[in-house]
Image 1: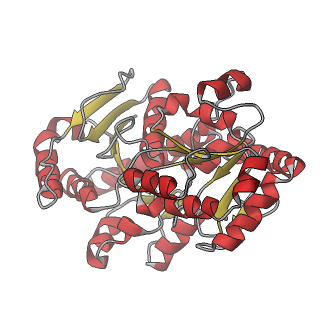
Image 2 (image 1 turned 30 degrees about the horizontal axis):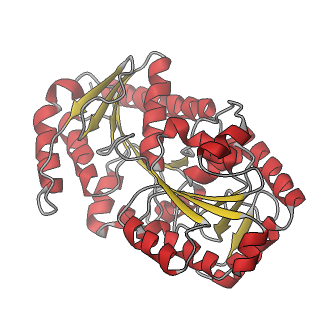
Length: 378
């Protein structure tokens, strides 16, 4: 099959869960012999066989960004779109209007994959309804997002999780810890994500500040913040103001092919996002048997069964968060049990090959249905 994927941002320029998943989906489909075209704002950084970039430049000025991207898309896509069997759009903001226009102009089947349950997914209702109504199928990365779409009146929805390939490589943990300035005695808590308000990394730092300094020293607690974003400078200042520099370390963005090193040195993963569709960092932590602490919100509670595959805390409640964190810090057997249960879950439900199988099946169904309809009309 020939498939046009649409996602304006790409990995590794952006290391968000959506961008990493689109990369792994494209790579997996290409390995199986499918021809993949990727419509994005960037030139080919992947150099993958059977993957061809369609680069659409745009004016990086807020007022003109979306309009320029859409107009340039229509100009550049003509020769490619005639060859493809279907379109799979992974954008759900105004940039996705390019997919809507391609669908209308070229009459190609359209699959929309929705990665977020809040925020930009729900732009003005009349626009979103037109866009989602044009789709032959809507893929939600979680049941919560699917339920929300159905509440909006869209019934052609299916659920296919967005996952990451589970890394099986074995590492020398002691050597890795030394590489990051850690010892084998340290209890390492990691945060992996963009340093943006929606990920709420301030919550974690404010919570760590509530712990007694004697407790931090006694337990050898080290918090490793992995990621970049607008909040980094203010977060670093906050750490200095709280006198936490000996316990909180910022290491910036790590290439995804090396992110498993971070999970290997970790004892606990903390996620503080205000909302998630299919939280990639949690799935990746599960794949390395790392116990997690997450807010009790949609996106997380479909993955994290409290007391079984991780611990959930009341959203925004530092006291409840610290209660759960201390519970994990003080109980190595609990950490091990939760990590093992989490690994079994991700091994059985979130295998990347299985997800690619589901996309292949969906693409064939949509393409076959479109061919049948065209034959009937003739």
